[in-house]
Image 1 (cartoon, helix red, strand yellow):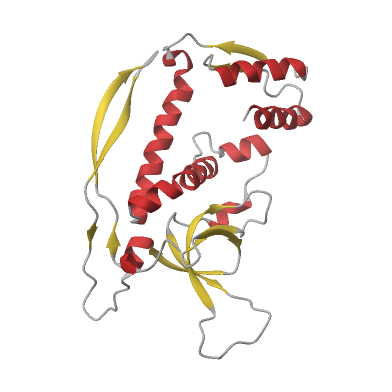
Image 2: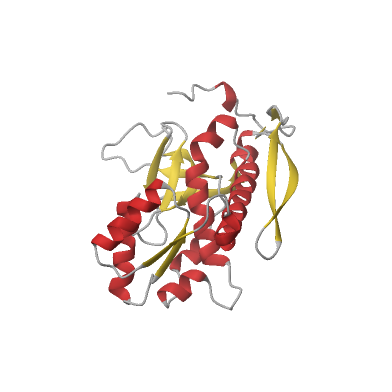
Length: 247
């Protein structure tokens, strides 16, 4: 991880030498190693370690982590996925939640992305709901039978970096792999709505913790057993739970 951080700081310094002048973090072993690499690369970054077991010394970052995890839980709950998929997709969800925040949060009239890059993001025109179901169009090189489906069901998980604004990261539900594509027709339904299932119900409990200047809330969750929602009358139910999803 330290190598990635060093490379990221190099890119920031290439734009403006005044970028990333100061870092504050705890004194974990990986952070001590990062400090050594920064000094070796002569990047002119001042590093300060917080005291052991004193997260309030870096309270703003600690609170942002708690807020991020709350967003991740909310997005996974709204998508309607089950326990297994929650464990598989939480990292994709956290990445997408961070990008959503950088694109849509505008406390000062501009999003963090626009402030950092001095221009708005084109991805704002292609925002989708995490867990939305779409049909990924198949562009085969050979002609198949006319009655075969020309697409497959996929699950929106995020956006791909260093690609055009309409390049999506999707989970192919048949092959259970992450793919990058722009040829998707979105259906406007989440995973749970499309397949008529409901993911684990979350019961939130709040615990107040002291920070340096204010209290903040950390949400805790208790999952109940997954329950199925009966499909509406006249609508064919996809028995997704009984499909061979393990490949």
